[in-house]
Amino acid sequence: MREISLDRLRTLVAITDRGSFADAARALHLAPPTVSLHIAELEDRIGAPLLSRKRGHVRPSAIGEVLVERARRLLADAEQALDDIQRQVQGLEGRARLGASTGAIAHLLPQALEVLRQHHPGIDIQVAVLTSHETLSRLADGTLDVGLVALPQPPVAGLVIKPWRRDPVMAFVPAHWRCPARVTPAWLAAQPLILNDATTRLSRLTADWFATGGQHPAPRIQLNYNDAIKSLVAAGYGAALLPHEATTPLPDRRIVMRPLRPALWRRLGIAHRAGYVERSTHHVLDVLWDLRLA
Image (tube, rainbow, N blue to C red; front, side, top):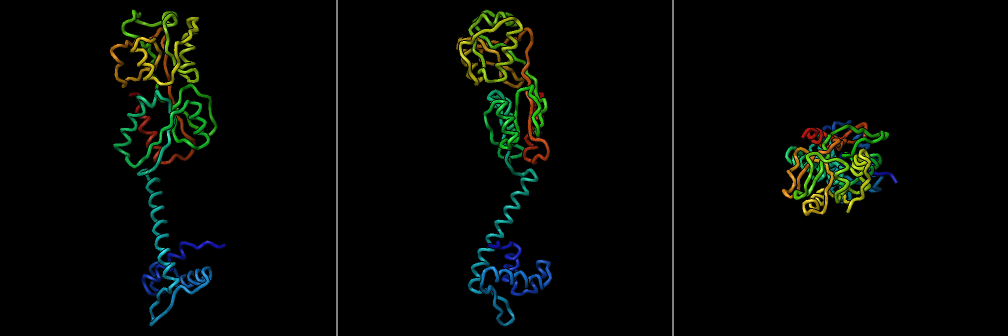
């Protein structure tokens, strides 16, 4: 079954509004025969007359009035759809889907969301809590637009992965413990430990750090929520290794932070699909990039 063209409906509405084929042709910048052809095609498709001429004035038939009413709504919806899409193309509105770990979401992402709310309030940011592997996988299949991932990562076809931040990993220790000025693998391995879940990149990073001192400790508990880990440290349950961003508030006074020897760094990257990037996603990338030194 042939579809009804919006152009033909636009012609029908123009004739109805102006009462004349010739006036409609001028308004639509069409040749008069083209206007006549549009109406002939519509009437052939509908199977009934849509217009009648009375005293030199063209008016819609009863069936034509029903179609004109529907046509006005369809044309208005089409115009609104184009306006909405144009606003997204211009970056005034839109949606960006972002994946990140709980650590990045807790302290880094809120800063970016605040800037975006102030400068780009029409952009809807949808956040998913994911591992780096999950984030890259969803970027590749098109269900995410931006990802914050742990580095290093192997190259992924169709994705751009750029270094973003390097934050020191610190020892978070209950304040009532006697703790050296710089924490070594040997000293920390002898303490009760609260470490990140074994599925995370930070867990593998800290395991490698312990291994430099010949240590392979077993933690009391493993979590994937840094604020919960800090709460357990404050309660004296154990010590932890966590990244510390410069803008993060100082920990609870029941916690002391100590640098590591050897030093350890958590590196993060920003990932997105290669090729065309929507303007709304560009805004998100720009704001995140400004946080690389924060």
